[in-house]
Length: 79
Image (cartoon, rainbow, N blue to C red):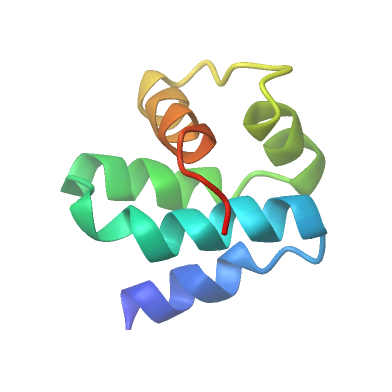
C-alpha cells in the first residue's frame, strides 16, 4: 500500500521529475533502508520547483538524509 502511494506521489506532471522519480522507485526504492525511505517520502512533500532544483543539482537540501536520497536519485539511470 505504501509503495503504491509513493508511486502516485512520484507523478508530478513535469516530465523531468516523473522520469527521475519513477525510475528511482522502480530500480532503487526496494534496496533503501527505512531511514532512506522516510527521507524519500519527505522529499516527495517538497514543491515541484524545489524538487527540480535538487534533482538537477542546482541546490542541495539542508536535511542530510534527504540530500543522500537526492544523490541516490541523481545516480539512478532514467529509463
